[in-house]
Length: 446
Ligand code: PEP
Ligand code: CO
Image (tube, rainbow, N blue to C red):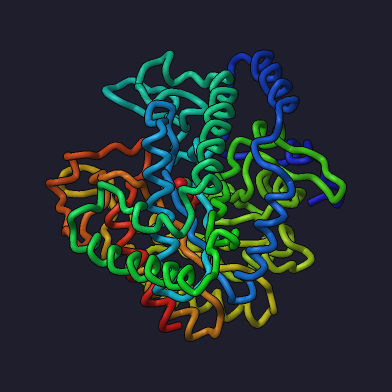
């Protein structure tokens, strides 16, 4: 790596997973216009997130990061965002109350469009076309016109992200997220189930505590932390042309204001490639996906590049090693990085190492594998004496049928009932809440 980082220095490095635009002039014009538009988030918010993440690095808080694998232009609605926010609030309050730990909430939302793919081209019936790379690049429809990368889609994604953030801010700060409403967050998707009873019990206890405080003359509305909350945004920083257009210079450095937090995917985290070069220059907190083949030497170099000053709250390693052998792999990473005195936040993505093909042909994930990787993550931290910093999930507030198992024992045959994802299979609302209760148990035992 050269010493001098600039907003364009990534262009001198090899880069993977980028679309090939045929109309370069049109791309250039759109990128210029995006760099003149208001940022999607603000640098002060990014700083607030970094300060909350410093608490996580210190073992005093837990991260809940979750949302769609890929947001879509067609699934964009008030209902979609509101149901996601509801289930995130329910999970967070469960982790805080039952797990007795403050929670930092980060959505995979308001910008999580672009997808890395295993092949550049997709073949169907003897026809070969560019792979679908997310709604901000091309269309999922397998037609020549649909699969042609269209730079106008970057602008559409920017505007959808702005609308999503607008609703997110209204929902989290406009009263809806007040703890007084804890009973109203239960969604239709979880209603009338044993899980909704468990949540009902927890929310009633919180409600009673607030009423008790008010009876004692304490006005709950005076406490901003009880009245609302922040849900920060994040996405995989994959399309570097777009991310560069969202850079804004502040007094203390460059911020990528397309989201509060950004991460580098498993397929683009090579030490001498463009994604690491680009992200080492921004002030945002940075995540890196850590797959089953990553070794200590490699991740130490990544940490040295992305967080040379070893600042608590700057760097998040998102492990996604798969349930099999997870304990041994994770224990080694946690122990060795602890020996190096690295202030890394570790969070567990139990989704991406556990994708399988169901007998019905659908790409799915088994709830039991997801839980097993989460449990291995907690056990390995306990053995290493390190802090389990959080969880990273692909989930939705809707009642989809994409992952099997869970309390309702969703079967392979039921996957076709409501399999809506644009990309990877997500936990539905009740599976997400169930997992939150199980994680709260692990947190309490920690
Ligand atoms: C993702 O988070 O959707 C993803 C593609 O993950 P990974 O880079 O870990 O495969
Ligand atoms: Co995914």
